[in-house]
Length: 307
Image 1 (cartoon, one colour):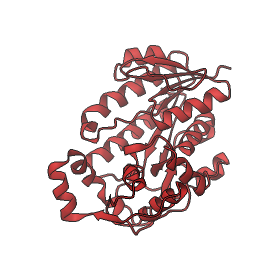
Image 2 (image 1 turned 90 degrees about the vertical axis):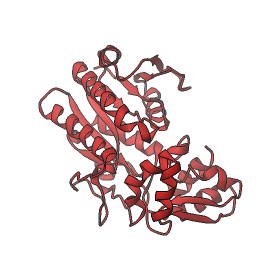
Image 3 (image 1 turned 45 degrees about the horizontal axis):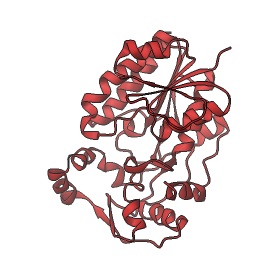
């Protein structure tokens, strides 16, 4: 039996996935537009445009698993960037007869009133969230029709860990906080909010791809008990040996005003509901299915502080 993997995307999750697979002796190819070296020993790097279904299919030929770790970083371009990319990824996985393992998020659930579990319906209302909903729906339909060896999506809460940078709400403000400056976070900073270590995302994605019994559904990445945004930031600062800083809140009219001058803030308004009520993810099912416990919170904070 072969153990060949194509990892699309070399962000923090893609690098962690490639590292895990290479460490166990898998044959791993990482695809990015630039072909940049991830620094992971034993991994092949290929430069190609992943929206080119034919080129991506050639790279995926013979692989057992295609890992979708892509994440167009510019939110303002999601409506343009994701549809052709998602279509090419699915086409390549189908042509290879591979397992299609997707790095997902919690956007498809839309606003929720309680802890999120995998049996909640995908009830997204905003355009970015509907994009993510459609990606999983299309992959699941292809799997159910027998066009894929299997499909699975792992969903994570807001990222913490090394390399997250502007893709995380805590790490986005961390440089200023480390310098002792006051920072501003989106929404209320005093409500429980789930956070997920990027290394745990990778561990769960690899485990889910390996486990045929887990295919055909979504799983929540094992994550620690929720903290408030302010507490999470203070804990990361403490791990770096720094004191807490003042934390402001960008909400309502102020957030709308920020959107007038910042395209990113304008796009984030769609997701502001995540920070206006408790936003808690339950990962019990995945912990039981895969035997994965979340990285201890203190270590998550140390890993984040080192970025």
